[in-house]
Each structure stands twice: as structure tokens, then as C-alpha cells.
Length: 195
Image 1 (cartoon, one colour):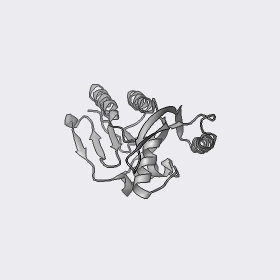
Image 2 (image 1 turned 90 degrees about the vertical axis):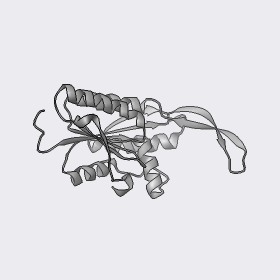
Image 3 (image 1 turned 60 degrees about the horizontal axis):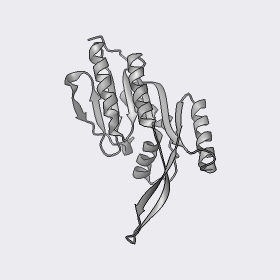
Image 4 (image 1 turned 135 degrees about the vertical axis):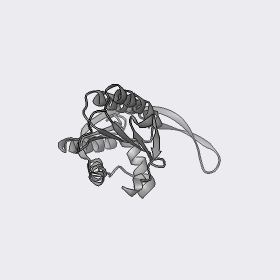
């Protein structure tokens, strides 16, 4: 096993919609007024890690689908970019969805859905592990499909005989993944609302 660096480089990967729902759940906010840079910096500061980068991923509506939210996200992402945050977007895909109403009836509404965000996060996590761009990946997402990316990072860690850590943060189930120590998952006691 290679010697671990005294100061570990951390890169934060944010699923923007998942972060919004976690903030809404924890604090009751109805719009995405969060600051991923402040959150990532605090997580790294409290653990003694060097924050080496932030990647923020989100779906946004096309201007013809929702001009107000398109403008909001274009402006918010532009500000993030001026702060050194790498932003990655995909246009929302709209589909009809049937929802139950409180009176027991149903109605069909047009709902915007993200497509490809989780795949992009997974690809970047794996690519950057191969490039040795981080010692710790801090992934803020509810999508447990990202465990597949974590498994690939475990393989990289074992093949290259180096330790790579990952923190996958789920709003109700945060897990700490450490590699390659027996390929185990250990429950982390910190909830996102505590950060």
C-alpha cells in the first residue's frame, strides 16, 4: 500500500436536484438557495481535508419550456463558475405523469425529469480516481446507483495499491465507504441536516 498523504485532497460531487430535496426536507426551503461551496468547504474543514475541487450537476429547463427557471439556473450556475465550481448540466425531459390528489382522484401533469446526471457523476468519479485527482470523493446524492461507481473505485484502489476514500451522502442514510479495507461499508453518524 502506498503511503497515504498527510493532507488528503477531496473533490465534492453534487447532484443539484438531490441537494435541493435534502435542503427542502431539512429546512423547508422551496427554492434552491443553497451554497455547495460553503457546504463542501465546511465538510472538508471539519475533517482536515484539502478541498481540491467542486463539481455541480443539475438538470435545467430549456428556455422555451420555462423561461423563469432557465434564467434562474443560468445565472446561479454562472456565479458558481466564477467561484471555481465546475458545472455540468443536462436539459430536463418532460413527460406526463399521473398523480393522486388529496380527494382520491388522479390527474395528469407535465413533469420535468433529469436524464443522464447520475451517469455523468459516476463517469467523472471513476475518471478522476484513475487520474489520481483526489484521495477522497465526497458525493452528495440520494441515488444509490452511484454505489456502482464506488465499486469501480474500489477496483482502482486495489489494482493501484493505494487508498481512495469516498463519502456518499444520502439525506436519510449516509454511508462511509473506505477502500480497500475489506470492501466494507460503515454507517456514518452525520446526517446532511447536521452540516
